[in-house]
Length: 480
Ligand SMILES: *Cc1c(COP(=O)(O)O)cnc(C)c1O
Image (cartoon, rainbow, N blue to C red; front, side):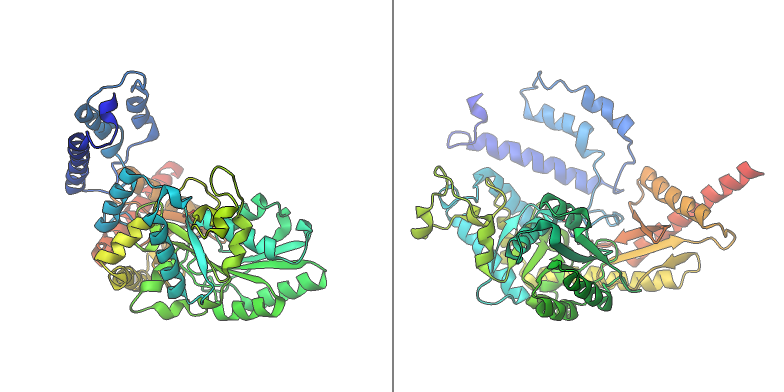
């Protein structure tokens, strides 16, 4: 069994095993004609149930053959141009290479004595990101597992910086379109259920700053403490970007922590064409970025950045075995002092490889391409009488629904759209998402693949219309 340990004596097995795995994935990518096979949980479960984990095959090739049946064949493939559903990007090869290296070396970024250079590379990428945001000379941050964790850590710092000991009096303002992790974080941080005050959005799904001003004023008058405003730079559903300069001004006025959730919109930080859409982000106290959404990085790759590095002390705890107090005096760079995690992956290496091979403009141009595609897709939808499209995209999502001329019952239209999404998923021809606008059921394209063309969008819309018509035809048949 020792022959499976990766070390100086097993280089050949390492090389051949990993190469064989890479070959399987490459072959799968080369022959995948649809983003999904349409397999159901019931159809797939028996193959996985049948595997006896206590009866190993002792043979890598046999295990890869088995993996074909239990995973590779039926996985959902984000690289396919007709995968249009969630905030999953196709990944760039330099990052995948970084992934292979980081898991083989297996550095852990909690302490210098478990990573050495990895620590400095992560720090340099944090500084690079903070400079792109414009956070100034005292900025810092740390890589996290994702936007949810970044938001949690940002709100932890905001809570600790708030001028009260009474959790019940704290209020967090976020738009109705903000990510649910804001609510979840508030709850984890011990805030009362009413702590997160939803602020209405305008027609373009951006936070209404007049309403925010009114709520913050009311909060102050009621003797409550405005702990934080969460501005979203790229809402998950609409890609809408809250008015950052106006929100920053209100945060200044009330002495409130400004957090910008740019989990999705962070791609604009490297955009050669649209960086101005993030103007005002440089005034934030903290920022969430998900490189695994708009920097074409594999999951996970995310960071939380702060304007004032001293605020990261709220995540600092010392343990004799790991990062004793004296290491601070000795100026040993232990990233665990800034993180909610202890053992932590060297995800930063993926971004490092990407920037060194492709450069920031290379990534930003890919993101610009999908933003431009979304704009053209919007024109397509707006001109198509079969569809109702919600807002002009500020990033790369399109929210729309099929509206048959002959049907007036909105609930029936809801059902037709739900059916169309499910039928499309079951066919595997394309994958789209769904969401509600008001009470109504809508469909969503999240465009993150520069390989997706306008023709793909046209074809998928035709498929959706076909499935919806099929549903409506069937229900008519049943009624008559
Ligand atoms: C996706 C998303 C998150 C959560 O990020 P994860 O990486 O999935 O944890 C938070 N905020 C916004 C706006 C998002 O789109």
